[in-house]
Every structure is written in C-alpha cells, then in structure tokens.
Image 1 (cartoon, rainbow, N blue to C red):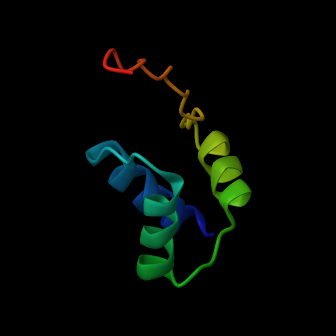
Image 2: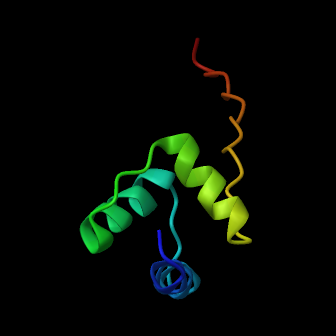
Length: 66
C-alpha cells in the first residue's frame, strides 16, 4: 500500500466507525484492489496508529423460567 493510499484509508477510518476488520478489508479491496488477510489488516491498523481490540464475550444470563 502506498503512502497516499494509507492516507486515504486513515481519513476514511477517522470518519466512520467499523465494528469488524472485515469491513475495513472490504473497503481496501473495493477502493484499492488490494487483498489483506485478517491478521494483515490488524497489523496495518496497528502500524497506522489505530487500535482494533478483539471483542470480549459477555456472560450469558440464566433463564429464570428454567
């Protein structure tokens, strides 16, 4: 990815809220024609100064009827 493409990606990321790395990967594929793996996308985000923490599982609430 060229520095100009990285700058375009950074400005897009600052303007939107992405819930999954797949959304970012789809944007990169559509906009630049580049394919990034999941781990490659996370490494790119980290290198550009963005954080993508893994979502934490929430405990399930027991069903009172059971």
